[in-house]
Image (cartoon, rainbow, N blue to C red):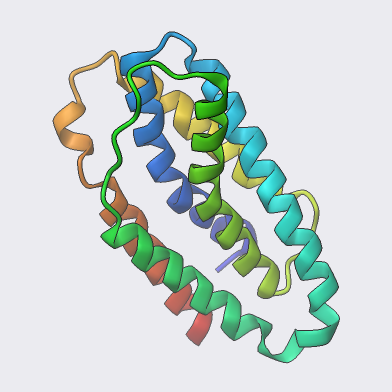
Length: 173
C-alpha cells in the first residue's frame, strides 16, 4: 500500500470520532469553526510532540519500532471500537473546547506515534492529522443542520475496525 494512502486512511480513521464531536457542537453552539480550529491546533501540538519523541527514540529502538507501531494502531482501533459516546456540555467555553480538542486529538497523537514507529518521522505528517481533524469537525458541525442524527451512532465501530485492519496490514505486510 502506498504510504500516502496509508497515512490518509489512518488520519481519517482516527478523525471519525471528531465528526461526532463537531456534530454535537453544531447542535449546541454557533462557534463551530472556532472549535474545529481548537481541535486542529490541539491535534497538531500532540502529533508534533510524538513525532519529536519518535525521532529521538528511532536510533535507540529501530528494530522493534515497526511491530510496536502496528500494535499501537491495533490498540487505538480496539479502544475506538469499544468506546462509549460522551455527552458534551450545552454551551462550550474556550477551556472546555480546548480540553475537548486535546481529548479527540489523543487518538491522532497515538496514531501519529505509530506512523513514526513505522519509520516515517517527517514533520509534515502531524499537519495531515490536524487537517483531517479540522475537516471532520467542520463536516460534523455542518451535519448538525441535517436530519442524519440517527445514522451517526456507531462511528466509533467504523473507526475502530478500520484502524485494527490497518494495524494488522502493517504488522504482516
